Image (cartoon, rainbow, N blue to C red; front, side, top):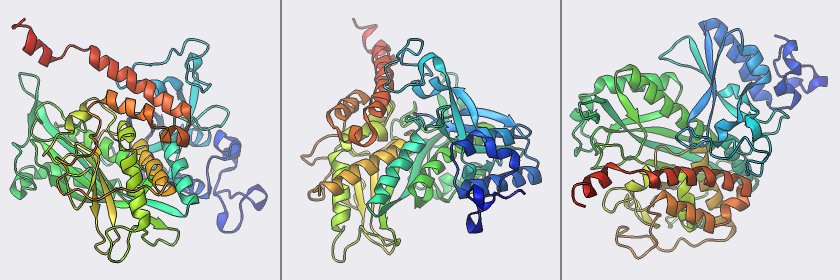
Length: 485
């Protein structure tokens, strides 16, 4: 291995393993990797050689949290690492149907950001620290990327980069965010004659041990696959609704937790598909009327020494914890579009459903939007129960940081905890994606943090999605009116 000399920013403990041929690529030219990524790239190449990896999937999580990219061959991998791979810029401006929303074949698509007219290229730059070998396809690797313009600038609509920027701002205040993940999902058998997927369980028996045992093959498949990917799996559980399951991941640094969610969702869907099953992170699929799936996002703060800062002896939360909580509540309505970004997700906000329906907090109360879990030896934490499992993890977590930082800066008061969250006289959460978009437009906190271009970009895509939904004639309308009127 050719090591970079001191004259080229190497030397001592910071030596970056690098082949001489790699020094003039896109990554080196724009200084896009630090020492850790250079070292990870060297290790990646060794693993590819030792395990006989033949292909590597190189992709990025788009605005909806869905991975897009290309599969490169073993022979093409060094060049892909050195100079990235190009993809059409329109991937960043599509709604959930895959339709490009802004008018890209005009001189100005109206995004406030150049580089999208004519569907020019953007460059996917791999993060070698995310490399995995897929256990269900042993000769295939997997890499997550950041998105850059051809001149080296990061595309502002790269949500992975947006989260890292937000965490850097938080770090400048002396704080670090730790995130724990609870992801609920549904797993169905193949559709019946009516086209509706077949439930695996009847529901109604939360955490039923024998119910989970009936699907031990599925549990074993998921556990083996997820742990082989080095994901920090804590538990696999049977939830309350028909065909409803949950996976929980150990808490860790926020940026790593977000990457974990992207890989976990992709892995569960692909593992289930190979087992003849269909997994979905849609909140309320057909056949799930008794319970919807959510993403409960646990969060805690630590200072630069690793000390938990949400704790205070004799109190539920410290002053910092209360202000962070106050910020989450103050911006809950506007932040809903990032925590619950689909039309379907808002059908989850129902009273007495273990999902919240209004803005408030409670002490160890699962009906509240924010459940405060007091210190039990590992520090107090907040659990936001308003998210849906389909949310883009980078935007969901970044929005929590924006709201929490603002809460600390303004000394936001969260008020008193709620004893009866479903009947408390507090503001309701948005009832639809349209209401959430209106709330975002009325709250400038996210525009101040991310810039008007980013907020306008995301709002434009979501407005288009919502307007398509409003124009669609649903099965309910057909049943309700066709024979009557």
